[in-house]
Picture 1 (cartoon, helix red, strand yellow):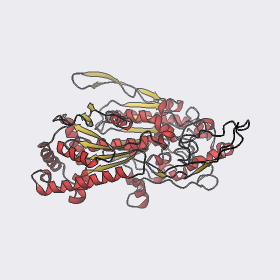
Picture 2: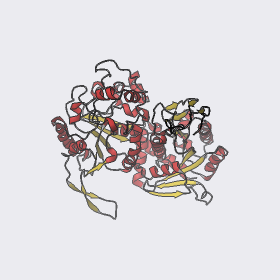
Picture 3: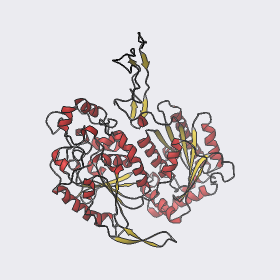
Picture 4: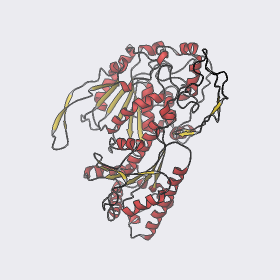
Amino acid sequence: RTSRAPPPRPLTGRALSGHGGTMAAPKSLEIDVCAVDDDNPNPTPHNVPAFGMTSCPNPVLFDTVPASKDRIVVVTTGLPARGKTHIARRVKNYLAFFHGVACENVNVADYRRERCGKHVPAAFFDDDNTEGREALSKAREAAMADVIRFVQAEDAFSKVVFYDGTNSTVTRRRWILEQLKGLGCKVLFIESVCRDEELLRANIMAVHAHSPDYVGVPLEQAIKDYGERISHFERFAQPLDSDGTEAHLSWIRVIDMRRYVVNNVHGYLQGRIVQLVMNLRSARHRFYLSRHGQSEYNTLGKIGGDSELTPEGRTYARKLGEYAEKKICRDEEGVEVPARLWTSGLLRTRQTAEFIPHPKITIQLPEPLGKTEWVQMRPRAWHNLDEIYAGVCDGMSYDEIKAKYPDEYEWRKKDKLAYRYPRGESYLDVCHRLEPIIMEMERCSEPLLIVAHQGILRIVYAYFMGLPREEAPYVSIPLNTVITLQPGTYTCEETRELLHTKHEVNSDGQLEPDAPGAAGPSAKEPPPMSPLLRKAAGGGLSFESYFVLGPRQLSSHDLDVPKSEQPWDDDPPSH
């Protein structure tokens, strides 16, 4: 026992930059260190990891202090139409959303378009074209200058920047390494090779449909021009380590998006990049997202629990079964195609899916495997898809939470993303358990229906739509609606189809006691909007044109309660 306490010691913080901005930590926190005595047996406690670095009293360490402090430059290499940009954009989105890494995508083609315009003829890329060669060289140098600026900026723990271009010669790759020399960054090359003619044709068609280079250009003209462009690059292309001088570099070779060669790759983030790349598919595929039907806890205003569906919820379940049979399990020509079904482990999602039929169909596998039998929509329940666990608040109404735990109620409103229920979960916790689900979704090639909960689907939706995860807790996922997502290289197309008559406002607990529409005014300010939604709200793009909709277009009134009016809700009260 000591008789005198040492002086207070400062706990210094630092500013953190994540996927959605910068969080400023206190410059100094005074901790009173008192003498050890019977009344105070722990005078120098161990603070919660990352204490003082967020507005949340119990933050998720993995997101506040990322596991790695690496600066990584990912360089894509390969001929045009090999899916390099698709890979770079998917990996960037994944690292930023699930690992809190500061990411930047530097595409050399964007710099070329700024200088030379979007539409340049194939002859521009001929190495014998002096003017084109010099213009491309300046574009590469400008892009590299931005890469270097991003790497050198001191504003994040972990950084990954993508230098996206063909980079298909040994000389070009040596130039890149020379430019990055002395910056203390690690370089990972990703080479995409396409030997499958059918896959190559699909990639070229996708370029015509989505690349800025061919907006407004007729299909046949675009295909001819792009083919000539590819031939100019083929003259000088050198695969990684083709001359035996690049075996010491870190690289992964992707062959037809199904075979892989990994060379000298080490490190945590590098490993995550490799794992995602090995699960990516180049073909566009559809995901169908649906909340469970109305549950008993919905009508009682309770969050959490494992209640059954109401009669209204079962009506929606029957309509979802019809929709799945007619729309999800068939292509545009009405031909039956294999499809998948995932639910959470909770009763209300399994009941919502129980009217979906499971006929057996015969499908053709790649040669020489022949044909096999497939069970349509074979249900698979994932506990990873269970709703956010509310801990001690499970089964309570919002009024009860506010009355019994007023401090928790206020903490929740301050930082909805990072706030963790007492003995429960936060949205960031759920992000961690959803990461394996995202991996499985990325590799899935069949249409997939996910019947889950609002908090879960908000995260899935935000990830594929390219929204910052800070916006995920405010995404509207209304009842009785199927949301279709079709991710692509540059965009993610979305449709929303209402299958059952909407309930009255707050029938699924969208409003808290002090939110607009309930009793009393709301103190919640709306969170930052994504660029697309900001454009929609600011004019120039209507809500109706923002969504690529199905049988009928939904107005903003159909999109349920605006996210600015959702200061608490996860999936209440089905939670």
